[in-house]
Image (cartoon, rainbow, N blue to C red; front, side):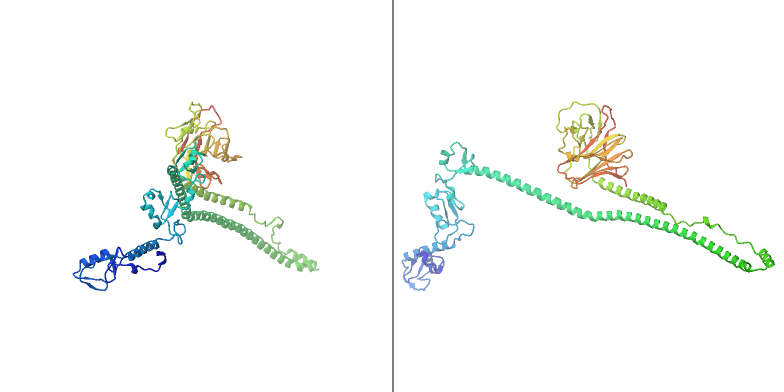
Length: 541
């Protein structure tokens, strides 16, 4: 009946006094309906008894009776309104399994009935004693999947051997010897594991966000430094260009002066020749008339009166040679080389000062030192003692090569350190990756995780495959080592000479790097007391 009155409005079933849907409706003698409580209270407050709607007076207080028809209709209307107000199911929500026609949104699912209910159809589970014992949960789809397909019983246990959900009957059959626990217990274990995974994932996310920030900061820092680098490069190139331009001007001037000198010499000789030509022409004019006379007397008398011929030079030995510019060019190139060397020295000095800003405080790790090496208490010096010590086995220690590593390692950025090698005839310096083999007799090359130079009185090399021969220099005092981890660069410097000895580039570092020292000597048995010393950087202006 209620379903057929979808056009009902609340006004049809509202009390004229409280304006709400009738509650225990009663009818007055005049035929109007009111809530029993409303009309009773209304008449309690009046002197005369009258109808609140039509104002009909009653001589005595009317004896009102319940209107059964209106009461039933009001109850049905309340149910209709309550159902109508319930939300319909939206995509992704669980529908009520009981509703016919338009399905409403389920508010609970029963794990016993395996049915989902809306507010209206859930009411028996909240009222009937037997249904109140059913386990209600938040709405869930596909409740039939919670049933064991073999035994048609609720899946309420978890088999840890096969990692599947089972019913009670399963534990008496195929899973009899398997450890099983309630779903809630396994849920808590798995949830704890899931929380751990989530924490780890969040930590990984944060680490990657920090790495992104680090990369972006590096890019921003590079952008800030690029103008200075360009300016410094432009200044250096400008200085070199000025040297070349000055050399070109001086060379051109010298060449032009030589040409001018040659031209002046030629002009002087030409003028002298022209003068002699003029003199000879005049002489010819004097002689020519006599050459035609036939008078012997006149000829002899006139010939005696001729003046002596003007002096002339022997021009067969006179030569104007074109100027030679070879010595001029050679001398100019020498001057250019000297000027460029001065500029390059200033540039190299600036480069060394730049890398010295990345100085780090190093101490040596005696646990890594070969048994023939002694490390000072402050960790700043190492020397070769030539006598083997009895030491406990240590996986960090070098057993073949006379090497020692620093305590500090570096996995990013740039770092620089200096080692005093004064008065030593042999030594090795460089860096090594953490996983370098410290027990085997292998070449210590970049392929094997080592970037190192070695020096003795007869040889100076960078260890590679093949070795890179370096020019032997004057006695070293202090050697600097610079590493740019991100750029894959290792550079070595002669600090006193302010020059770069060698740079190894193009590497992809993937492990922590440790500074490496060796007071190496090819002459075992010779006691060497002069140590290698990690010295503080002295930046000179």
